[in-house]
Length: 289
Ligand SMILES: Cc1ncc(COP(=O)(O)O)c(C=O)c1O
Image (cartoon, rainbow, N blue to C red; front, side, top):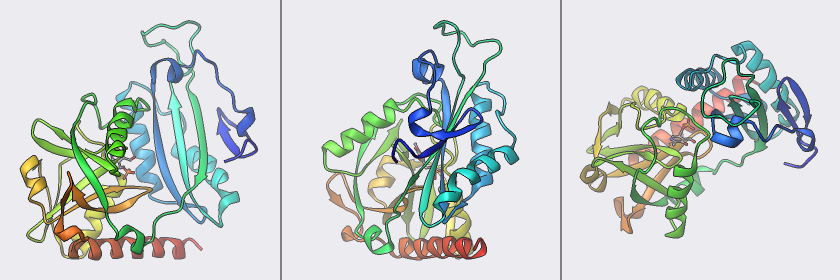
């Protein structure tokens, strides 16, 4: 992005350099806000309705009303990605409770939200690059108990991810009360004896849009899928481990806590589901040509 890049702020499209908000914004003072990240392939927003539904769920969970109708969001986000139809983009959307006249923890009676959106080019790894696999470590989940909200308060996630980076790992798989819940910026799947397992939705993990799509596609492929808690020991005993997100898609974990998973190779089920995911995206691009 450059300072000339067009962003959306409170009803206006303007250059990034001109997008200004108050230092009293509750997003800045308290991280009082929520966000979304939506991929756009050649100008077409992927799984848009699911992302808008999650955005509205996050708003409702922090006691905010919807700030725009779905159609208004579609118009804004489409206009934002339109000039970038030749590339793949990730669209970042953030809504905060806006600025009050003074700093006060109490919720304002009549907030004026701050609504911001921007897009950035993404280069999604091809299957060959992804197939190299990633390494991960397990860490205790130090975050709060409302991880189903896509809150902009990401310090816990950031520090956990940094601990993984400090150990030359790509991701941290988080443990709570002896169960693996999700990654610091991704959802978790394991494969055991041909069965694909992911933790059920709860307050301890973000209901990932990619997670849901993977379940849909895996079921279509005839894979036995189950939403079940994954104990720490089941994680270590897994035949395959994957971490998933909208921008990273399906990352096979080939090393966990310095131990090889599946002889440090992505497994058979990963190959099957990843190929199906690519095919689904390809069809989406073609249908929107
Ligand atoms: C904590 C966390 N869990 C899961 C995900 C995956 O969600 P999605 O598939 O909607 O990108 C993310 C994405 O950023 C995340 O931050």
